[in-house]
Amino acid sequence: MDHPADKSELKTLHKLIEKVEKDMENLSFNTTVSAMMIAVNDWSGQASISESTLLDFAVLLSPLAPHLAEELWQHMGGTHSIAYAPFPVLNPEYLVEDAIQYPVQFNGKTRFFVEVPTASTPAEVEALVRAHEKTEGYMEGKKIRKIIVVPGRIVNVVVG
Image (cartoon, rainbow, N blue to C red; front, side):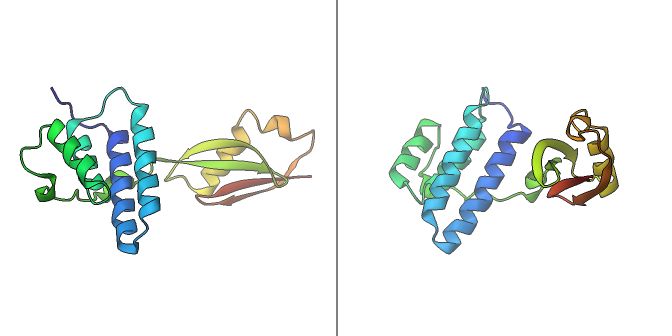
């Protein structure tokens, strides 16, 4: 019996749908195939994949490998030809990130990464970096002169 798709499975699928739509428009077939391989690698780490996700994947594959996609479609229980199946629709809500991983630099050298909720302000990110257990080890007995937070990108701690 099939199970509903979980959040990470759907996130991977909708990233793939977005990439396939963009690449097909630009005739960038190599990167489309690469995106499909990345999606398969992401899914291979999961215990199981829902049937609906696999059917959508077969439809995404069909413009590039029609015979293989048709075979997959039939093995998964498709009742008609995959040529008549609707193309999967992108749902942007699955593409929203819950957290951002900031690289933390001390005087320009990346030392560690800290994961922060997406909605965090620069002041909250700075507070998390100051409180992080690894921060003290990179201080080398000096004081923090400045912390520069580039929202969504990087944190640089100037020690002097």
